Length: 364
Ligand SMILES: [Zn+2]
Image (tube, rainbow, N blue to C red; front, side, top):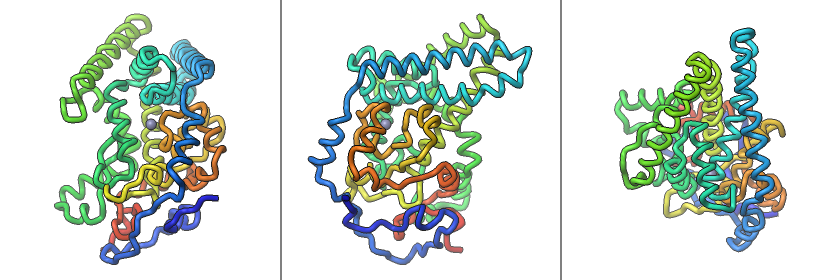
């Protein structure tokens, strides 16, 4: 069994999220960088075994995701007048299928879903439109996220803004209030979905967003506008508002929560750029979210996020096999849904204790 050279701080399980110690921000605790004791050749060999698409499984996944999604929307529409409560009851199912649709888009973004690049990207675009995500632009942001996750000096790629304790304390009271608002669990879960849906509609050119990405944003907007117009023409504005929108809103909330718990937990790996290590960040900076197999199906096993980060081109339908193939994957911090809910209160990285803390843990 592989072990870490430097013992980790207490894990969630050992500590219990409600028992977060009040940190002493001025103390200097041992801060040697964590490094995974696993030779590069060994983990690259494990990743290589599971990398690459399986056409049969991929196509079946498209059918068993988009088929039920269309059927669920159809049922919700048919029930809208006679039994609106039944339409409402179907929202979680439609949302779950939209999450699974997003997972297909995610694999397409890693070029791991289909072996034919053009078809892979076309499917990425379509599943992106269905989940109001500009595929090419998201793919670029997401690649940066994978290349910088857990790197304190390269924050801001596909993650929620996270300040260190010292950065936060250096802010003006107004800026501190703004940060507290953004990091409040209710802001994240209730306003986050709207922000996600609207914020992706416009993207100015920057170093990370070239012409190709801007075109992708507007092509997605045009396809969404076309789709919404056609849906209003065929089924009416009420159906779009009461069938698609609530499902997309819940799916976006679930997506935000998943993205959040995958990297925001108490002893998540964060290091300065010079100390940052890809494999260690992947295994100890990503959580292993344990989900019931039914939820695992809807989320394409994205809870095995440590496996996804060490091998981003392992398709979702191979993550479980990969996870079981090597003991190093047991090093990833395990999280339950309840623990994941409690991590929403974590908001600052304590540079000295090297862990995420709550606002309540700040010294008064
Ligand atoms: Zn990814």
